Length: 143
Image (cartoon, rainbow, N blue to C red; front, side, top):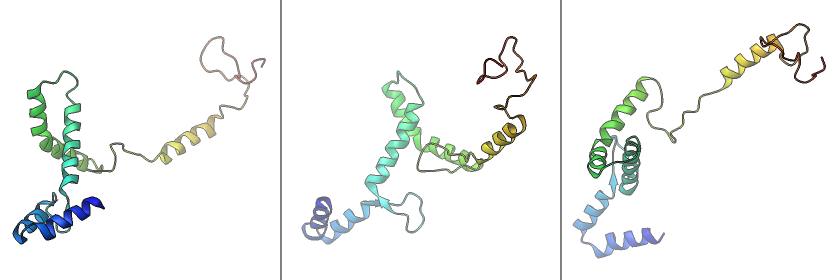
């Protein structure tokens, strides 16, 4: 709230109308170019820093100053390539997290089908697991 009051005081009362308009126009950016996609400039800067950090992490340890400068200059192009690749393979180009959460419903169905057929916890005579000297059941070692 303090920042908002400070911003309004400076832009509405202290600055000239021309300077006030200039400050308001430079406070927001539109990275996508589509209408209604404006975001605060500080948020855009945080996103830029995050993308540069992701590129710099890929270089490993022992980075020189020149390598850091090259990586920070290349970050927008690298992110464009990775986003294009993700889109081409059907993944979300930009998501809320770095993790891809795949549904495990198909895996559960396959596992339940296999377990339903072989009944691994049911005691069956002459069942072997292919190793010499193993017990018939891990639950009943005397069997």
